[in-house]
Image (cartoon, rainbow, N blue to C red; front, side):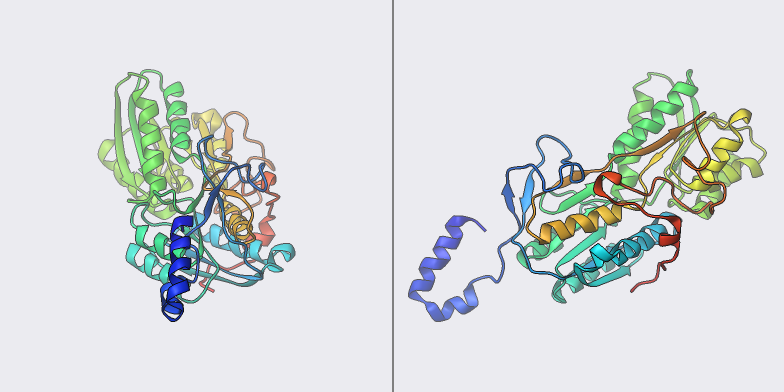
Length: 379
């Protein structure tokens, strides 16, 4: 709320005291924009030197915080929910929480918005959200700000500067994969691009980055696109279908479900080819095992622990600390021929596990046991 508006309300109240009981808002409309740096500069890194810094009115804890997830039917989302619960259960975090609630609403954007509205109406202090659509949340962002609720989007972020976003450079990740393919397929060729969930910001940004990198080479690329929903079984099926139709690919890139993509290649008895993909443990196992047979991989992404950074950011904002409007997280990458067991992948662990699920600069680290001990159920 502007100082002018506050003064106007105050002046009016001097004349109409009774009416002001109804006219004055209960909360300031959103955070104050202040000068940086952020409260924890090594963790809360601003996206650019032009990123705004927010300061919310401090609240007294413990706090009620909710996770409003959308799509859940893949291992990344399941591990993300487990990681959120594991983080909320850590003693120093749990001491600041009165309640931590999780709900997943599927691919229905309206259902996710309704869930956020319900959390606002129920008096939650902060809501972290993995958004199904980057542009559909403007009304609910305004409602959150008007109610003094801290809204933090992560992974699939929001196209807004009125809420906090926490993310890696998703387009930069696509560029990384595209450049890997261009380096290993120097004359251009036919590439299978296994995309994520249609309509999300992550899918859009990674796709744009891949094509930016390939287009920059000036070579001829024939890119066949399918949607694997970041899910191994779905990605395996659409890859198998694409191979059946196209017969051959010179390279592959996948945003998730990469273990399923490699399995489809092997099932079809196709020759291995350069692959730019995510950080699934199973994918990295394949990359290490079949490097000598032509599966030359770059593996990059960010672990589901970015949800923990989002929760940490929400708590800091509720405590009145200065945080960037847009927080940039580092990528976790590994490349052929440098995949090391026990560091870049874990041969003894499940395929359905995302490696690099930690942010040491934020003091966020997890063991596999901490995460896998949690459920993905709404709670």
